[in-house]
Amino acid sequence: MIRLTTPACAAATLMLCGIFTAPVFAQSAAAPYQLSVFAHAPKGSSAPDSIAVVRDHVFVGYGDGHLPDGSDGLNSEIVEYRMDGTIVHTYTVPGHSDGLKVDPTTHLLWALQNEDANANLVVINPETHGQKLYTFASAAHGGGYDDIVFRGCKVYISASNPANNPNAGPAIVSATLEGSTVEVKPVLFGNASAVDIPTDKTVQLNLQDPDSMTLDPEGNLVLDSQADQELIIISNPGGSNQRVLHLPLSYLSSTGVTPVEVDDTAFVTSTEGFILFADKKLNAVFSLKKSAFVPGAAYTAADGGPFVGTIDMTTGLITPIVTGLGNPGGLVFVNTSKHDGDDPRRDDPDACHERDGDSR
Image 1: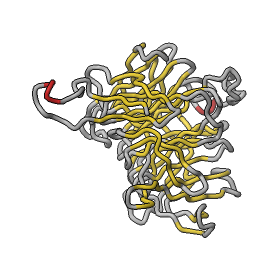
Image 2: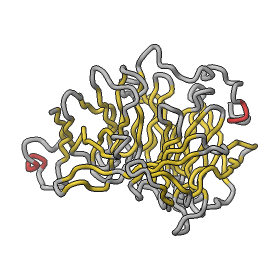
Image 3: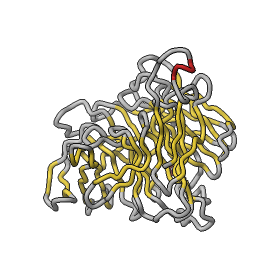
Image 4: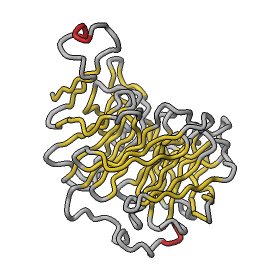
């Protein structure tokens, strides 16, 4: 086991700090993983969540405890780090920072704010530090927007915090930028039919908490419906042959198989690399390393645990790897291979020019 203890005053005894305050979090990583702190929240920022990597720089969105509908009128920070954890630049965005992804074609950073309502998108140029703000029209599902996935020349966004139960509104939309507006079209509805992976039976969804999204190794969209404790896998999104799969999530607790809520999930894309994950309660971003990862393996930040672990994509059973956490959320796999197999269009900014409008 590798153990890290935070905060710094929690050593042999809390009495060394003068008073007994909050409980001690002792982070443990199962062998052969090595756990370390990548960065602590800078002064004035808190609740690190989404993480994105642009070439050799890491971007972390800090929610700062602001209201997720932006109604408090406060701003959040996105902090740019070098790979050694030193700060390069801090960006200010309007509202509660949540989704954060990199366009692999343009290398621009897309930042979503206000996942509960009144969402906005800020597109950031990491080279010039320029920012452009985009707004959404009224959301058909009644909530906000949470996370982003780039697939080919299309952009997909999760439609979070639906107003209705059952939810018949869009749970995933496709997005294009027009002027200063994000135009969206439904891709997956909250009450879609799906095949349940463990039972092979058809079920009707009722997605009450569409949240984080990613791509699996086959290019399928993977949506986390967080409070529903399930992953939704969509092949051929938006096409006439779109197919939807349902995977309930659980882990082995002291009382047996227990459903569990997760936040970000990431799939390993190389044997070489490491995982970065953020913990909102511990105000830190951690690095998880081992000598060789298994390509295709799925890792997730189970905030309902709380732990970080691997998912069996056949059963939905999660095996904890890092325990002793507070509230893990953002998680990415950083591919350090020189032959990373990325999208061959990634260095051709004109390949998907319709995606980013005039934001370059």
